[in-house]
Amino acid sequence: MNKFLKTHNHLNDLANNSYRALNEGVYDAVEYDHSRHEAIGLRKSILASPHAPLIAEIKFASPSKGKIVESGDRKIDNLPRLASMMVESGAIGLSILTQPYVFGGSPDYLGAIRKTTSAPLLMKDIIVSETQIDSAKRLGADCVLLIKSLFDNNLTEGSMERFVEYTIKRGLQLVLEVHSEQEFKEVLKSPIDTRRTLVGINNRDLLTLRVDIETTPNLLKKYDKGKNMVISESGISKPEEIQLLKKAGADAFLVGTSIMESDNIPSKVSELCLAL
Image (tube, rainbow, N blue to C red; front, side):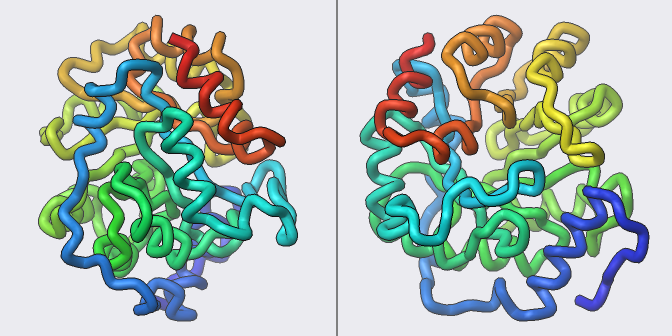
């Protein structure tokens, strides 16, 4: 677990943060053990949603914005309560940042939230090792995020195919994240098990950290998603944007920063859920 990359760009730096966390044993924590938890279907929850299928994200910092929530903020006093408020306000699932560096997350956050909610939980991290997938299983995650560009740039400990197979073997679902036209085209051509794998289109370019909300519509207009369920991620803050993305063919919407920055999180979640 000593793989560190000397070339500095945003993607390499994100991978290096994960290798640092792995080397420090961050994902070996045993405070929570929900390994007997049976995965709750994120796809099923999206299909059953009576309103805009919103996946609300709990995070306290990001590479592009720095700190979103200060350490003394009331939002982090009781994470299970925060999670419950999001679900009670309409979120059909939760994305929990577990990457400690840059994002201010922790595996313990997911473990604590799992104890108090039956909503599907996505472990949001920069996954470069199967150790992180094992951690997700132990913490009670239902789903993990795999970022295609990390695999394409040889920043992981194995191939994307190997990680997908390992994730499913561990009884978890996955969101396979793409950003570019080439990545989306390759994922659509790959033999995806659409029952366990969703496709995430990130409107943020992880190489430059720039956000373009038109990324999702542009890709969906150019390529037929087939039976794949698509989650649009990043840069979403208004009901009008959810309407635009839905019209383009997105099935669900992952929103973090605009929710966490809100002074009234329940109201913000409700506003986005009622966009459709």
